[in-house]
Image (cartoon, rainbow, N blue to C red; front, side, top):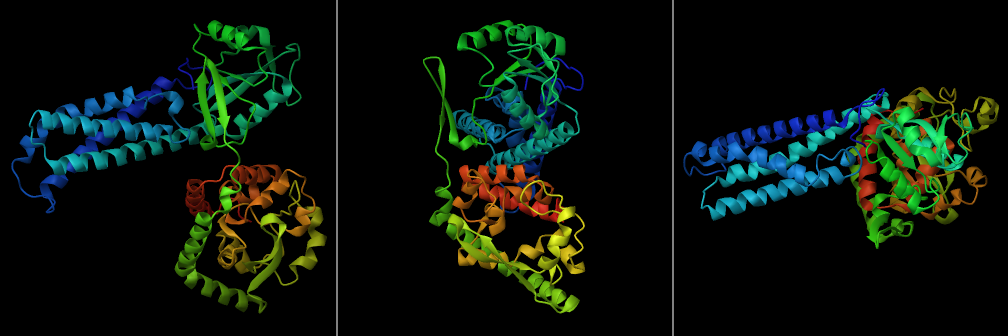
Length: 477
């Protein structure tokens, strides 16, 4: 994100930075206020003297010092805001340094600061600072999705590379980049086949920036002939507040697998090997077993009630058993609560003309085969709960790619077959990113991203997001 002027619907980052500083000051003030009340009134802290006298001198200087350290570590850098955990790590580091500095200063000055106030201030302060940043991040991302607080961007490179990058930026609209044009080696076309207008030639990027009032220039891996050309463009843009971004020729790789190390002025990007083998370790299996047992224990009343309602509706079987393809292509019997009429499979062929899917999946928003209770349990994904038994059997995992039908696997091309390197999941990135609203290409992309970039932290994050997606019933039909 650049520190550029406001252009069009773009937003000047100084306003965002000011909001962050004000929010942090409020968080610190609230933390100190709560710490003072806690130290004064909680019985766990002994009465060792006048609390006001012990904390007043520190209260006068602590907020300013804390904010200054947040600035020093880069917690107010626009480029660290809104993406990943950089921002939160910097807030945590600055807060810990502040706590250490206060502790050392009190020790050297032999000042008897209330330990209860000290502990409560920093425990509450760190928590409120991170929660405040998270709240601001959600607000900004929501605004960006609606077309506000965006930065104008031009993309430099050949048509294919420009189109790929533009698609990602348009899909991930929460990043806040609005692509206004392309700068290509040809430069004389009116627009690309994707509809993106061509605004200049690669030899005159500065002119394109000035004409489009761009805040950001995105260079694809083939966007410049040599390192010297890129350096020359950087010199030209030095007096213009347009941020430069270089996109390497790698995609769908998580941050944990990428490490950048400048050597001799050459930025070397190290990419660790895919993590599909790590996604099948004993640690993930143990997590699956313990997690499935815990969930079964909690939802057992819901399972019993659901089974009773399904049986009462039409007298058919409670469970729907279907052959699915698991890890390494092995088939298994996938269990679900029956949400359709008993002869649903026989009626499928007659509905193929109304298929809304754009790939190998059948999708229909108002499928007449779904029963009344089926609509309810599908809306909240209750129909998936019996798959916890598949998890205990080792046929599925709590988190992973969606389990596929054999007929779907027969139509996979070689790249998509990589989805079968891990156990299919009760939930996954596809579940928390739109479920049935996703196109086939997007579902595959998310599944492959999961297989290649697996980590236990990602599994935990997906499970948390799954709860939110299920409660909101997003993309369920």
